Image (cartoon, rainbow, N blue to C red; front, side, top):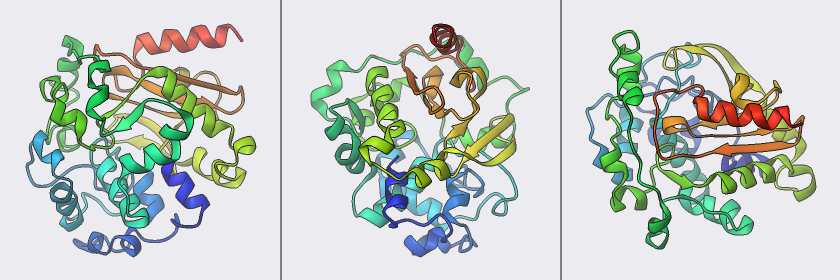
Length: 300
């Protein structure tokens, strides 16, 4: 949604190269990667080539510079490969170059503060007592150890480094800005933010043209990381989503670690979010969330 605002204000152009805003990104043969290619998970930057540790995520410039200097894993637009961890730093640095503010600061100013929601990337210490401790599960451990799932794509995208609840439950992790991995919120706040985005015509947050461009399918096909057919928008939303996003092909949103999800359905005027602290191994449809969504649509 931050990206949508920047595009709507003509501060960011989908057709321009990422390096036009972030010159160092051109290193490693990435000078021709367009903003739209990066946002739709086709840039080949779905992992770090150099081994890193979870605590390296506290050092923004370090992990961002590694990405800026490395070669992509494939040619731009050649494959669809979900960037589960790198995307937050890649888009976060792009936002930072355009606005001179971090992702967390933009989130606070554009959405969190005006809407009076509780949604943070870099959660202030005063809110830490409200954060539930994350709990792992056997299904989560199996998802990343099953030989039928583990290949070069999964290892590169998810396991360098692996996420551990032990680290995610620390104050250091919660305080840091680690987009795509440590947004702390609750279902009410996430649903309210999606509702605000859906209501763009009345609140004038963005134009209808920008909304349509960024919430419709930009690329579809087999995603080598997700091991499933995916439809990504130019803003990085998963479009359609099957049963997880209700019954509308125009619904858009995203899943999170361990089963969380949030989406907006412009056809039915519905926003929905599910958050939990018991993490399961499903990346495309936690049964708890699926049952919630099914119940909502049955009530329409």
